[in-house]
Amino acid sequence: MKKITFLVLLCTTSLTFVFANTFYVAVDGSDDNAGTKSKPFATVQKAQTVVQPGDTVYIRGGLYAMTEAQVAQTKRGYACVTYLDKSGVAGKYIHYINYPGEVPVFNYTAVKPAGLRVAAFYVTGSYIHLKGFEVTGVQVTISTHTQSECFENHGSNNIYERLSMHDGMAIGFYLLAGSDNLILNCDAYRNWDYFSENGRGGNTDGFGCHPAPGGKNNIFRGCRSWFNSDDGFDLINSSEATTFDHCWAFYNGFNKDFVSEGDGNGFKSGGYGLKKLGNEIPNPVPRNTIMFCLAVRNKANGFYSNHHVGGSNWYNNSAYRNGCNFNMLNRLRDTIQDVPGFDHVLYNNLGFKGGKEVQQLDAAKCTTANNYFDLKLDASESDFMSLDESLLTAPRKPDGSLPDIDFMQLKPGSRFIDKGKDIGFTFKGKAPDLGAFEWSQ
Image 1 (tube, helix red, strand yellow):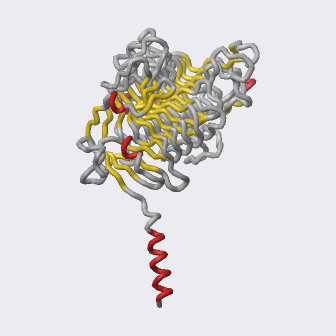
Image 2 (cartoon, one colour; image 1 turned 120 degrees about the vertical axis):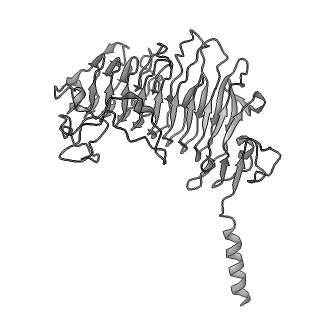
Image 3 (tube, one colour; image 1 turned 30 degrees about the vertical axis):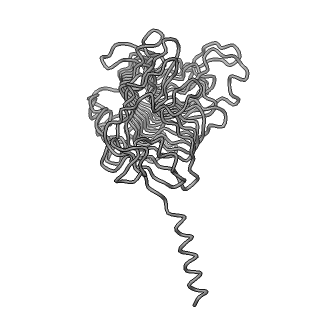
């Protein structure tokens, strides 16, 4: 009996080590507290000092007025306000999430460090999950070429979920390194740098993904980007391929009053500026995938290849009222000469009422099938359930996914129903429909 009792005690003691801990952060907390629910920490930075893989930090609702005194580290010319360098492990993420039913809002209008860019959350750790809070008011204080960010990622296997980045001067989400990151159901909107350079916010994108070599398999899913002064989603100078899946970009290139500002593309897929053949251009050139995405009334282009030196995959996208709905402009690798797009794969795309519909596409050098321009079918308002743009900012569903709206949903009897090519995605009816939305039969 003694041996059995000892084994039971040993097993029970061992099990205590697998239980995760829970900590709390609150507006009225103190970093001198223990981080419990009744005595919460004041900052996420303090919480990071105590967490281990598998732990959860609950962030209570309210307004967190961030200050320069809270800058955790200065790195690469950035004032990193919250610096997350502690990693979880596979199967045991470190979670920083909103307390259920509450909305934490981090405001950075008072963080104006002279001569430094600002990163509200600078993440170098991996296996981190951030969820359910807002970042607003991030500043730019350098008058020359510069930028700030709400989130900057350098880690891998991170999840950024249900984050809202708005009403500041900074890029919403910015990835420079790391692989297998998922940016899920996030919103970036009304961000405009009116201070640096010419004040037109030419670097302020909603989402930027520019991974260094090895930064594979980064996915943006269910994200929205609107009224950002430059682009909605930007992949310039990327060394690895990225996927945009079921994302929406609208009104980019304008401020909230529809005054023209930066470039104004919905989805900018790649490109390497004026760089010639050499180490600056990766080999092979990344082949990005943009699928089931929606681009509406972006100043320049809805879907844009941006002088890329190779092709991308464009599947089941919908475009409406963009300066140009689909612009596939490419560039030659050796001579940096712009040429009509080559090596693209375009299936099942749909556009309507663009200033121009399709530009810079060398169809003979691409794989195109069952797009509205291949079928020579012009859309009309009667093809859609609704073209009410106010629906685009409807509240998300309780699980954080995109709202179910009638905008650009096909009406029964539309010529674009069952006109697509089966490329392996789920569909209803005899064949896939054109565009981002499958008709509900």
